[in-house]
Length: 88
Image 1 (tube, helix red, strand yellow):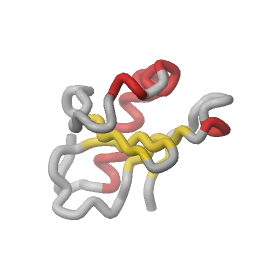
Image 2 (image 1 turned 90 degrees about the vertical axis):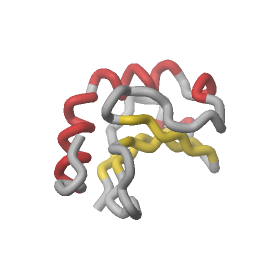
Image 3 (image 1 turned 45 degrees about the vertical axis):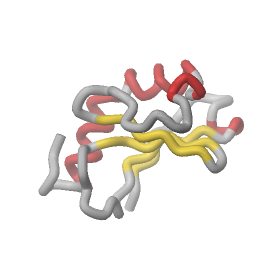
Image 4 (image 1 turned 180 degrees about the horizontal axis):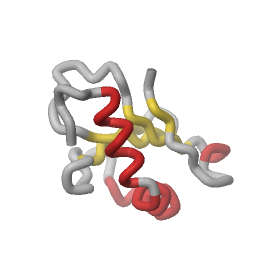
């Protein structure tokens, strides 16, 4: 089951979601996924850098980044629970 980070209002109402997915095929680098509508951004849990250039990372709301930073250790823990063979 994926992990959904609780975001402060009004971010969820504006369509923002932050997830640790449990069905990552091949795993790759540990990361979280930020979603808004049809746009998806991947952020590395190893160094906090965005993993893709498109869509532009600057399009992610500052409040979403702040929520991620505030719960960084929890996000790492949730990745490790879901992907014990590929820990952060």
